[in-house]
Amino acid sequence: MAHGGFLSVDLGHPFLNRTADGFLKVGAVGACKVAAEETFHCLHKGDVSKHKVENALKKMCKEGAYWGSVAGVYVGVEYGVDRIRGHRDWKNAMIGGAVTGALVSAVNSNDRNHVVGNAITGAAIATAAHYLHHLT
Image 1 (tube, rainbow, N blue to C red):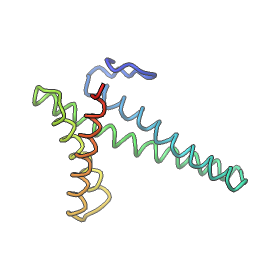
Image 2: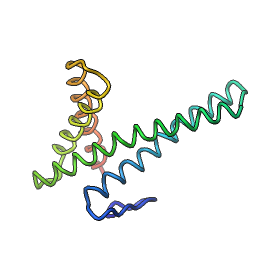
Image 3: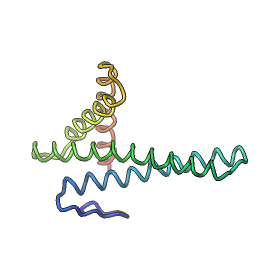
Image 4: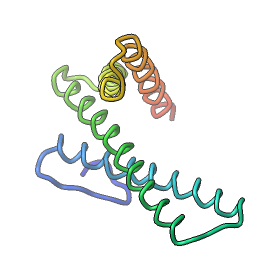
């Protein structure tokens, strides 16, 4: 892959590679977030048990899969928009964020206003992240 980093995925096509790469990397971040939260709760309460560890592992898998899926959709949409438009700029991030926000929201809610609001939020966050990434 052209991205580099601690993990490299080669599924034979840049779209699949980037989508899988986004899923795995961001999914790992989601799982680590849960691990940190659960560790804090156990240390704060002073209570560690086999049941709590098993529950934490289940939460890690669930959150990792959720965060990874969202990232995979975003990266895939952004890549597709890049290929269609032939340009790599903030507009691809905005469209990718809007589509991802709308899809994730539509899965979780039937309220049209909620879906549109999350599409706008996704577009804003993705556009801001694009600009932050390109500051240096």
